[in-house]
Length: 362
Image 1 (tube, rainbow, N blue to C red):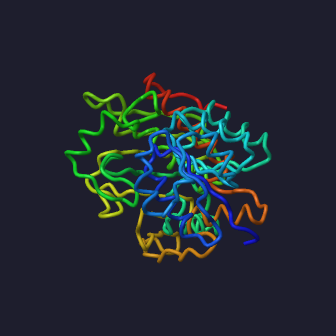
Image 2 (cartoon, one colour; image 1 turned 90 degrees about the horizontal axis):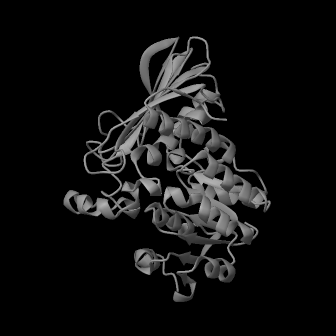
Image 3 (spheres, rainbow, N blue to C red; image 1 turned 90 degrees about the vertical axis):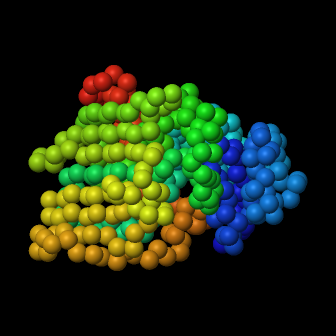
């Protein structure tokens, strides 16, 4: 690379900040120039793991931005704070990388897009599922026409719950996790908590990617209502697309799977099933094969997943390569694809609240 990219990590609400800063730490063309959170204790393990000196540790966002002068800032606040944080850092004219989901509402997503567009920099929304070899392989085969026009996307994903692990997938015991629920933004409605807000965007955004930007016309959703909690832990969203003979697509989110998919795939399995006119593909998280059916080979067969190669093995590597070359962010990290996914999330939240099918918002 022509330079060492200066990267700051701001707000540690989401445990993925530690995972992302590890990718920065390991990248030869990147440097962690600042970390910032109002609660210094939340940064302690990251500071220790990555040997971050004290003069690069901040509790004030503006001071972090002005002194560290990042080329790229990673944001991991609670979902309902995404737009506020993007608007706060955008005037410093830095590229902005937001960890999933996009936003709590479509209006907030549009605020984010506008704030970064005004600076001439790029807004990036990261979805970790984008970097699973199985899902990348499914996209390649779909783009090659292996299963023909995609008619349906079926998605089921989640884990045992956001309190059952921290960065690097370090496990938390169930009793501790249950005690911590009441304190966590993940379980607070006004912070954008709930499995629908946390995980539905994965399915709708990657689903839109698989369908090459096609959007549904109407959405129906239902959520569970756990006793004593403000938010859902299980949601099912059904989308109707205006495609002749397509049927319906389904996007299901679950906090409380029987096992975490990175340890043992639960049943139902976490991942995607794509249904096309000429075949089907099942692509499950963390698996080393996908299963493919085609008209000339209707018995499902295993296909080894692609080996991801640089610079497309992880989000930091991909983003820095794009920025280095002056190329636009594409696919499910691009605001254009993410916005369609957010439109579906908005419709699902409204449908669940009102108990009826709703049209997709514009």
